[in-house]
Amino acid sequence: MDELYRDYILDHYKEPRNFGELDPHDLEWHDHNPLCGDELGVHIVVADGKVADLRFHGTGCAISQAAASIASEELIGMPVEEVGGLSADWVFELLGIDISPTRRKCALLNLKVMRGATTGDASWPEVAAS
Amino acid sequence: MAPLALNVRADFPVLAGDIAYLDSGATSQKPEAVLAAMDSYYRESNANVHRGVYGLARDATELFEGARARIAEFAGGDTDLTIFTRNATEAINLVAYAWGREHVGAGDEVLITEMEHHSNIVPWQMLCQEVGAKLRYLSVSEDGTLSLDELDSVLAEGRVKLVALTHVSNVLGTLNPVAEVAARAHAAGALVLVDGAQAVPQLPVDVVETGADFYAWTGHKALGPTGIGVLHGRREILEAMRPFMGGGDMIGRVDFDTSTWNELPFKFEAGTSPIAEAVGLGAAIDYLRGIGMDNVRAHERDITAYTLDRLAELDWVKVFGPLDVERRGGAVSFAVEGAHPHDIAEICDRHGVCIRAGHHCAQPLMRAIGVNATARASFHVYNSREDIDRLVAALEDVHAIFGS
Image (cartoon, rainbow over all chains, first blue to last red; front, side, top):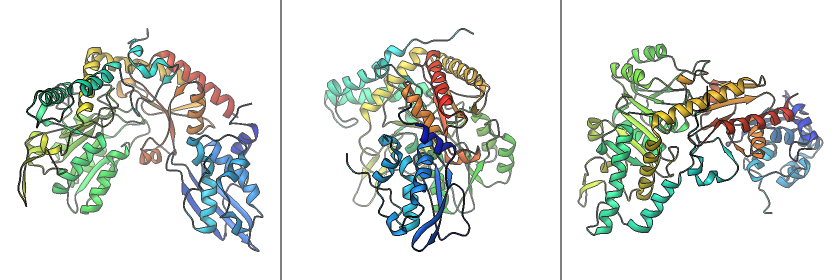
C-alpha cells in the first residue's frame, strides 16, 4: 500500500464527509494556502456550546481534503472552546501518515480555518519541533 | 520524426543523479562552464568594478563589462542600453517606478494580459493604485492565445499608456506575437514592455526586432546564476528617465543637497553590481551560443511536440495552452482527472521526475482558465525524450492511485 495515499486517505478525498454549506450557520471562516492557491471554508452551527454541525467547502489536494474530512468527524460534538486549543499534532495523528514539511500546510489548512471560525485567530497552527 | 537530442546532459553537474528535471520554467540547471567562470572570477579576479586603478580591479571591470557586451549582443541590444538588475521582477519594477510614476497618471490605463506572471501584474497594480490609473487585462482565449482585435479595441479608446505582456507564458507556453502587439500599441501612442523571462532562455530573441520599448529577462532561467536580471531599453526613453534607486556608481557628482546622474547604463545600477553573477551569465550565454539558439529552439520544439503527443495518448490527461508547437514554447501545463496537481507532483517525485504544481505565480490566469492550480513540465537543453517517458510512467501511477 502507498505510504501516503492510503486507502482511507483516498476514501476521504474521493468521498469527503461533511462537505458542502450550512445555512443558516453561527460561525464561518474562509482561508487559502498561499503556496498553491487552494481554498477552504467552513460553516458551523453551535448548540449548547458545542459544534452541533459543520460543513467544509473548497478545493484542494488529497491531503488537505482528507484532513478536513477526517477531522470533521471528530469536530462535530466538540465543545467550541476546545477547538482553538487543538494542535498541529492532533491533525497529524488523525491522518496517521508521515507528512513532509512541504505538505504540512495542506494538512493544516482545515485546522487553521476551524480555529479562525471559533477564535478569530488567523495564524497557521504551529508545528512542534521534532 | 527522429528525436533531436543535444546530448549535453553531462555538462550539468546536478543532473549526474538519476532525475528527470522538468522544472526549467522555474529555474534552469547550470552547466559546468558557468560554475567554473564564477569560481575563477572569485579565485583570480575579484575586486570592485569601475573604481580601482590597480590591475585586479581592471581585470574585474573587464570581465564584468565584457559580459555585459556579450549579453547585449546575444539579445540584440546595445551595450549601454543593457542594464543589470537582480532579476526580471526588479527590471519590471524599475520601469514601473522610474518611468511609470512620471508618465502614467489619473485616468490613464496600463494594459496587461490574463496570462501574466505576478511579476508583471503586481508592479502595475501598485502603480495604478498610487497614481489613480486603471489596470486592464486582455483576455486569454480557450486555446491559450490573445486576441489582437481585443487589443485594437482597447487601444482605440485612447487611454492606454503602456502595454505590458509576456513573450512566452510560463503556464500555457503561449508564444505571443509581441512585434505585432508593439506595432499596434505604438500606433496608439502607448509604450510596450515585454517580459522575456521564459523567452530568452529558449528562443533566438532580438530585443530590437520585438519592438519593445523595455524588454526584461532573468539569468537563472537561461542557464546562468540567480541574482542577475537584464533590462534592455530604448535610448531616448532611458536617457529621459529618472534613476530607480540612489546610491554609489549611479551618480555623476554628489553635493550636499543634490546629485547628478551617471551615464547609461550605470544610472540604473546603484550600489555594487552582481559582478560574479554577470560573469556567470556571460558564460551561460556563451554556452547557449555554442549550441546555437536555433538549435536550442528546435530541441525545445521537439521535446514539446513529443510531450504533447505522449500526453494525448492518455485520455485522463487534459493539456492547457496551444497545441501547435510553432505557437508555443517549452512549458506544458496539464491536469490529471481526479488528482490534484500537488498529488501529481508528489507521485512524480517518487519516480525521480521533478515537475511543478501550483498556481505558477499566475493566479489571475488560473481563474481565467477555471482551475486553482496545474501541474507543469518545462524543458531545457539537457532534457531528452527519455525524461518525458519517465513522466508518462509516473502519470500512469498517478492514474492508478487517483483514477476512479
